[in-house]
Image (cartoon, rainbow, N blue to C red; front, side, top):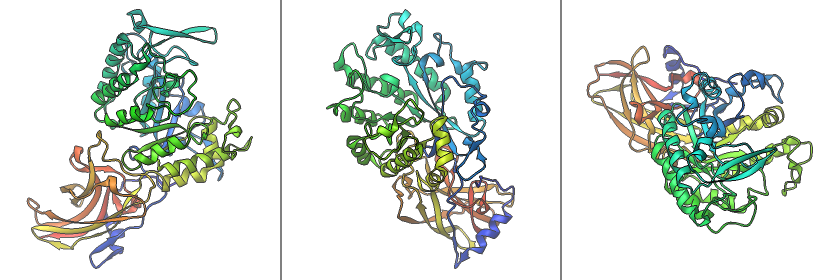
Length: 501
């Protein structure tokens, strides 16, 4: 697999760009293989709530066999690590936060992820049915009302989501969490609802079932207020917020309105049961289609192909018993239809099935899924005085889209240009105010023209470069483009040598 490399000097890249220049135009061949470390894009790996920093070795994730022979590291393919865990694991006692304790399991686990260049993602579960007690005891001890359920021999307490004491304590916890993790360099997205069984947003038990809209407004407003930099997602399904007992039933009359209430608070979309055709039905497909290219969609596969899930009874009739590769193919098909930006590898059996049986689909999603942007050509003069006139064209190879339109990103990424000195350092940078990356869809090309002022640039020889820059970080390259590493200086894409007079 090709890996991202940084060239200390730009001479080789200049040579490669010059080879493809014709009549002032530099053309590029897209890189369709390299794993691009871009936000809200690519593969997600899952972590069990009881894993620690040694799971890479203990789980075999550093040596996963593939269907092509040999082994790979899961961390070489995943951009994001999704942690679905409990409020109690983050805050076992009031004000005692796991991320502040360097000896805590979660702290060590998170550091091992970030050290590999992978970003974090969370879903925080408060309901303990079918699991363990997910809300810390102190919440109930200070007066939050609750209901009980049996998990094995244990009785666990779960809060009513419309209880004011629960909401007060949960709000303080989320505010503290945001103080640490409202950081786009650490966190890719937050699955920011987490109510109901397994945090999936169904089978809620309220004190007052008519409060579902008020609860939605409270929790989505809380996350939107505290996590201003991090994309927020909600599990979209036909029973969201519904007080049903088992999470199964006809389409709720309020589901669409509740989810769109969350979208109105800046949320994007995620679904927990792709490929599980008894759950991911026409309603879910139509809802995703309605929001395609307006909000990104994140995929989670539904079936667990270990023995306790009988995936071969799926109503599609396409999954054979003993053939988990059938599930992988069904999930991939559903992901393509929904134009998802991210897919999940899940854990253990699913990871081994993806790599060991359908490694070609893993690589296909890298090359075809999500967003994968590259410049097809850039035209610029070799000499300039006063300004540089540039023309350029970009293309998206992926079936998803680059969601610069979501509130948390607020068009922070755009096309930019720079003049690099002989050491590859920018001496002047420009941003395009014409490009909107969220409109770049597969099958089209997008061309622009800009005039770059040379005010303040000392006459001399430079290298013109382009990139997808970050407006919040002084126009430094913020997204990786799908261009061969040999055509780059760091994350800048070499256009040509240029003399400023």
